[in-house]
Length: 193
Image (spheres, rainbow, N blue to C red):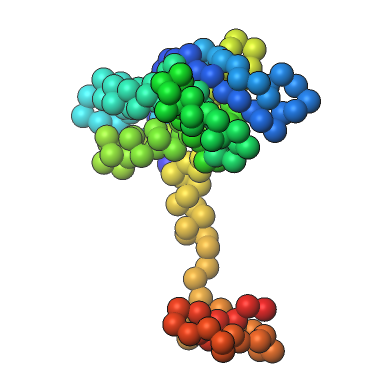
């Protein structure tokens, strides 16, 4: 299968982060970067204009990305100082964004990939996909997040055997496990072993 790939660079804006787990470095303090991201869009069939992706259709994606990162403070969902940063946000001292999966340039690339994947899927009616995203903190530091290409997903689906219904294994409680009898309702008969 032939694949066409086009790329687009989007300025994400100036963003502050705090990597609370990086106690060995100054990254555990609030610090900032001027972020930009490069997106790779793949397809096996071009549109009627012979384009993979209409770059004019990326304005909404750019707006969502800049809402997340431009002049904001991104904090990990498990940051022990999260309530303090929430107070700063409530006092309008910062524009807080909580990142459940954590912060760091790798997680930023993953966030951008996931957001772009949904946008491109909708924009092109599933004709295109996001191959990968690279995000730069500055000229010397970047990280890339790659998803499965359509070809890889199709090959995996085609080569993953599905057993006939009669031979499928039930994943019920293993023999010998104690089954809870003291709890009724939702947990009645649940195996905890």
